[in-house]
Image (cartoon, rainbow, N blue to C red; front, side):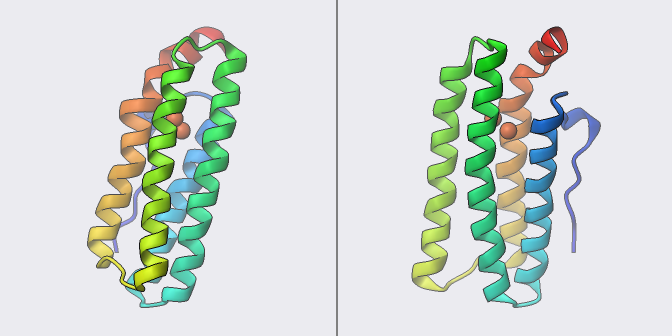
Length: 133
Ligand SMILES: [Fe+2]
Ligand SMILES: [Fe+2]
């Protein structure tokens, strides 16, 4: 099974934020492994952890950005809300239907999700971090 790894290019340069991103990636990899193995109960626990960690991560990241004076914090926070809604909708769908994506589709979707957050959104404050830290 493929695994996704955070590369240097995807690091934003803040240890707490990069650490959270690493944990999110680890959870995507671990939940994919459990889904592939057909361990749905463990998969659901890990997916719920992923939703919870995402929520905490977004809150932490927003606090950091606000405290450092990142000018685009409100728009970035709004984007986080949309992402959180999407993840929670997935969790509900799994819980209510008991139907899971096939592991490859799941892995592809979730890495796109996480990469989208890193690359197109969080990298918007990478140069800002380099200036202020
Ligand atoms: Fe973000
Ligand atoms: Fe982030």
